[in-house]
Length: 153
Image (cartoon, rainbow, N blue to C red):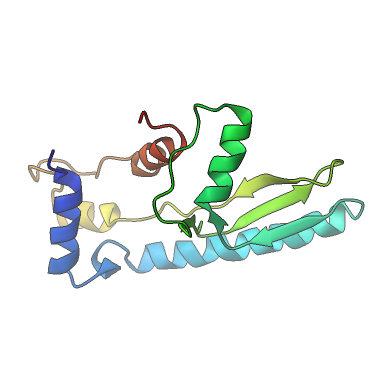
């Protein structure tokens, strides 16, 4: 089965010589602000709750995610084909240690100001498969997360 969206994105990336075409200046500013915000929040949590232990991580391995999911329900998680595969949210991951000395994720920050919808609308440029819509379809990150969590074998 041919992956139309993957093929389209690959072609678009080659045409624009990388991610700059879809990751414009506003998106880059937003990405940096999300990262800064989560680090400020991390420091605020440590000061506000001195009796708790917090940690900030830039990334988390998919193997760890799958192990945690499988501990909850054996149907969750997918086989890992790249042993060191990981996710790196734009704003990182904040965790707190619980009473059983286990780390619990309390916040994952991801920027979602990607694309050039505002710029395209201002210029009257239509987008999409048939160049007939003002906005790109949303939901890509949600679809990917679901595929990472539960996929029939």
